[in-house]
Image (cartoon, rainbow, N blue to C red; front, side, top):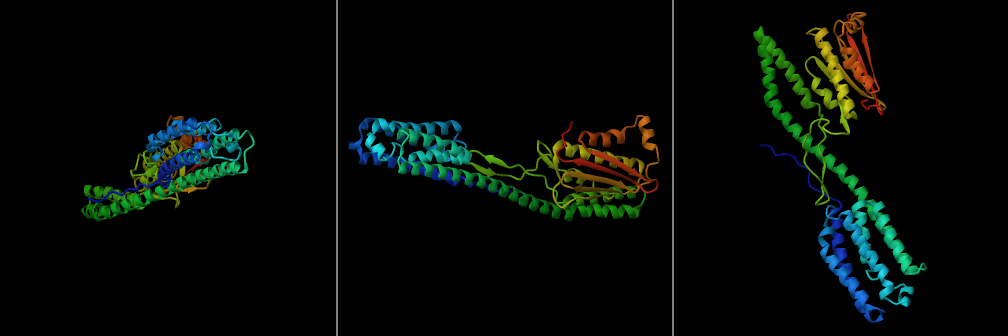
Length: 405
């Protein structure tokens, strides 16, 4: 049994969370040692001792919370920032005004930067800007609106560093999503190639043999051979077209990682856009040729389905009115601002006035199934038929007006 392709678990930001956990531990130890080295210089050392004890307990208790994006919630980030701001604002009560005026460190010291960096890793540069602004305001307030040059330097350094890291995280996430999608496409392509080899070695060869034997035997066997030939062409087109449904990319919140499997879902199962080619390719067969652009033709899901239904209605008309031996062609063109799908056949064509007569008799196939659908999408359906030269239906869907009204 063949091994199923999977996309490797990965996360660019996970090492940042791991580094942040160590940073918080090291800086809380540094804050305690810094206080211990100048214990006698504090005006009210008991306040500093109480706060630092709380800071140590908080850092140890919340150590698992900063191990990943899922556990580091907004509520936790707000509480963590509040602990840092409380330490800054308590500094004037514990330390002397002379030390503060000289640019002495606040009670949490550089531990505060860890709280701001958590905002940056979690939410990007905007969150980092939000948190660092509060820290800057608290530091300026502690110095009575007249901070020293060193204080301004430290505040600005934290602000710039956190915003820069937040921006890098956002870029890394976008790159990670692109890489995950590329890996998914590669995995799906390999699986499709494997299936194509298996189908070619088995099913397609059997269908081709049935077609040849049926043609040789004649009678009912010839009809069976014709059907087998149509299925062979349709299956060969499906296998070789390379139209792979987009797989789902999920975010593993517990690890802050993009994962995972290349499972194909139902075409257009959700909102968003859908490659129109994936809906039209199954129409290809021995009597229907399908021509497509080299790249995807995205349309909103409702619009793509309506266009596919209109194409199906046009092909039904070919089967009913053009005769058993009629050949049909589907051409898909993407002009950027609009998508054009042309369905043409080599049948006898439609006699003049026949469509008006059909509408008068209550048969509304072309009027409703084709023109009505395109009109609802803000597009148009033009039908050109010359007796003896076949029929051509041109469907135009403008982008930006594809809401199904």
